[in-house]
Image 1: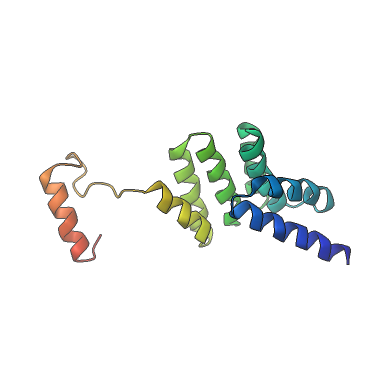
Image 2 (image 1 turned 90 degrees about the vertical axis):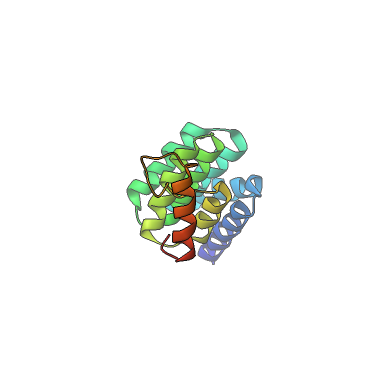
Length: 147
């Protein structure tokens, strides 16, 4: 029976964190790490600390430790990327999100990347993005579904 309560607490915390209710998620994960010390719990706690208490560096350290212990869980990369976004480090966040997608598909990471609005690199990299060759060649290749 106690295991069920912990599982419910963790599930409620994850739902709250993913829906933007990080103050509720923070309460859940502060309790969850006391009851069950797992990398996933620490990862979500790190995100909640960064969001609610602005403890970005501490959150990054906790997420990186979770990644070291469980490197194939994309949720750790999701939480680390979210912390980087909160801290204003978009390029680092994009890099971390892409790393997480290498291990497994994650709809939350994909949603974050869509929100950021990534652009593909120019077709001809030595020309500026707004050069007519890049513009029209990019449109042409997209129409052929090659890009």
